[in-house]
Image (cartoon, rainbow, N blue to C red; front, side, top):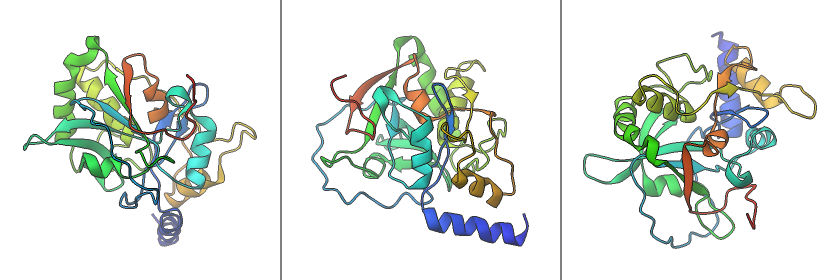
Length: 254
């Protein structure tokens, strides 16, 4: 990559502070973003949580706070019950028996303590904006090999170009997709759909995505196969079994 491209990309990162993709939609599929550094917490007050028995293999769908990237995502993708869900991780137990979340971040595939994961964003009542999806009985035999696959990928790099065929780097929903597909003998458990980076009102690529891919020296992968947490949260192989807090877009009385 030329020096001016590198400088431009660094400016994008420093200006938005958050970004990472996930990709898919109900009618239009969105590629989305993950935080550059997931250390910032919501300024809203924390609230004591009712205990929930999180199980290995549960998927934690998260609504992360953001700016123009997240506005673009919210416009083209919808998660369970209307939620804006911009990140997903897999619950697992580490060597000491503690629940951790395996997730793909900008720094690579990581093992994150549950409390750190939950503390990233909160709703108006101070609760984590996280939903828990659990595989249905027919797919539960896939959990153990899928988690083994996720642990084996720790420290693998982040997939900046959202190329599902890369094979050696991962964005958040791709990590879930690949590990469960591998556990299922190569047959997908979650479905890929064409990604879109375009505003449905104008049919033009969102400027934030143009700038992002230009900074990487790459073309916008409009129409390439991918998936995102919003679409994944609506998968028929999952049941949403717990709501820690209300993500953006959450529909009441449903």
